[in-house]
Structures are given as C-alpha cells and as structure tokens.
Image 1 (tube, rainbow, N blue to C red):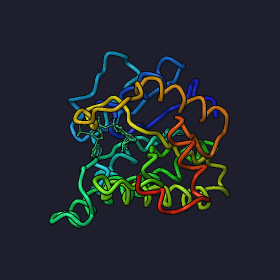
Image 2: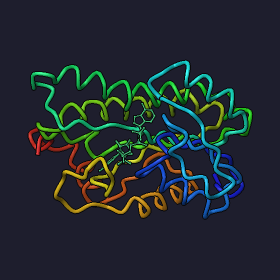
Image 3: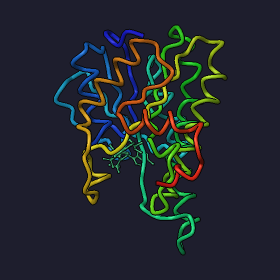
Length: 233
Ligand SMILES: NC(=O)c1ccc[n+]([C@@H]2O[C@H](COP(=O)([O-])OP(=O)(O)OC[C@H]3O[C@@H](n4cnc5c(N)ncnc54)[C@H](OP(=O)(O)O)[C@@H]3O)[C@@H](O)[C@H]2O)c1
C-alpha cells in the first residue's frame, strides 16, 4: 500500500525504531500518525499530524481503548518490544520469557485483533510486525528474547492467514542489531533505525510479506534448511 495520505498507528512510537518509523511516515506524506506510547507525554508532537495515543500493548483494556480512539487507521506497525539478555535456563529465565512473550508476541496479536475490523473498513490496509533475526537464531544468552521473537514470527504468519480474506497485507521484518536504547550495552555493528524505517515503508509499498533487512537476516534465513546446530551461534 502507498503510505502517502495513510493513517498509521505505530506502537512504541516515543523512541528508538518506532520514533524513526513515525518520522519516515511523516516525510512520505502520511495524513496522520497515532503515536502509541505507555506515556503519551513522551511523544514528539512537533508535527501536527502526530496524535499521541496512550497504549500499553500488554494491557487488553488499553488496547481496546486505543482502537476506539483511532477509528481511521489503515496501517498498524507493531513495533513496541522489550529485550532481556537472559537465557531461558537462567534462574529468572522463565519469568523473563513470560514478560517478553507478553510484550513481543501477545502484544502484537492483541493490537492487530483490536484493529482488524478498522483495517477491513479502510480497504484492508497493512500490518507490520517488527521481528528480529533472533526469530530464527538463538544465542544462549539471548534465548528468552529469541523464543519470544520466534513466537512473534508465528503470530505474524497466523495473522497473515487470518486477514488474507479481508485484503490486509501482513509484513514481518527481520533485522540484526539496531542503534537504539535496546542495544546500548552491545558492542557490535548496528543499523541506523532511520535506514530500517525507510526499508520498512518501501516493503509496505511493494506489498511484501517479509523484509530481510540485512546480510545477517538473509544469511540466517537461507541457512534454515541446513544443520540445526548452526542456529545457536
Ligand atoms: N534494537 C535492536 O537491535 C533490535 C533488533 C531487532 C529487532 N528489534 C525490535 O525493534 C522493535 C523496537 O525496538 P527498539 O530497538 O526501538 O527498542 P527501544 O529503543 O528499547 O524502544 C522500545 C519501545 O517499545 C516500547 N514498549 C516497550 N514495552 C511496551 C509496552 N508494553 N507497551 C507499549 N510500548 C512498549 C518502549 O516504550 P517505553 O519508552 O515506555 O519503554 C519504547 O517505545 C522491538 O520490537 C525490538 O524487539 C530491535
């Protein structure tokens, strides 16, 4: 779909990749961008087309209220996420996994379910789920995050099948490290979130189901048919 004149919802829009996607939408001529944030006061409203929207993706009441307050959305970007650098076998690993599953996998499902009829009423529109190369690749120290992103990939595939009949494009985005607060402690090459935001909107415009945004994601996806031992790094 063409994002010019579109009305978008971006979750986790107050910082990091979410903020970069909001800026890219505005620069491409979006009519309105609902900027979902747990604290709407943290949203940059310099551009009058930005509408701060209180939204905690783990809270069903918050999601329902957001959908009622944004009845004109034709593009949903499920970007909000958390990352805990913790193995599922660490002492607190199961609790860490539950938190990340709630935010990273159940959250996008709740949001998309709540907005599905709105998307249908506006011609189908599109859903973007920000996933990770770690949907497919599981370094032990990141395994609680990786399990949640693998679940989010499956949620994305379920969503695509479910919303096909109403003509909704569902795009899964896989990428390695981005230069945001989430990876401030990581000393590795990182992608500028503004660069990924442009790739995401190009993929939406192209009607794509999947974006493999970097060499790492392309290599890991290509390797899925190989030896499973390679999937732990
Ligand atoms: N950074 C990376 O290297 C990387 C790589 C691959 C994929 N990703 C994915 O990219 C997405 C964006 O990450 P980022 O790097 O921009 O991270 P970030 O800078 O840490 O920002 C995370 C955003 O998610 C929001 N958020 C967290 N929990 C939420 C909840 N329950 N409800 C609503 N919003 C919530 C945060 O809001 P608050 O300000 O309220 O905390 C913040 O706006 C995530 O899905 C992440 O998993 C990131």
